[in-house]
Length: 123
Image (cartoon, rainbow, N blue to C red; front, top):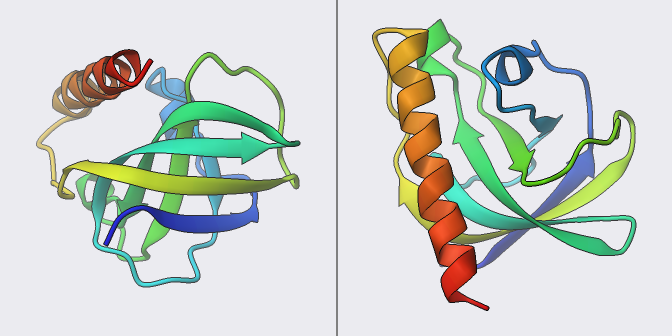
């Protein structure tokens, strides 16, 4: 049942998100949450930011471990080792294995547009 609050200390990931144009804050997941992409809000140092969060295992890359990765919109700070809180607001879609990084990036752009539209309508 949404919303769901999760939090953790940001740790270094594999930097795939950054390479693909979607840098993420990665942190350990301590709750069992349905895998997928979520519209979210991220709180860092008492300021709230719009975000898109991935909960799951990176099946496109053959990974098995479930993790949390948050792409914070309009944000460009180094927050490694910092504490963040994320509120999952609405699920966009389930986890999916893509046949290529190009296909993944196309879907990530679609997910981002859905989130931006959601936040625009909430104003």
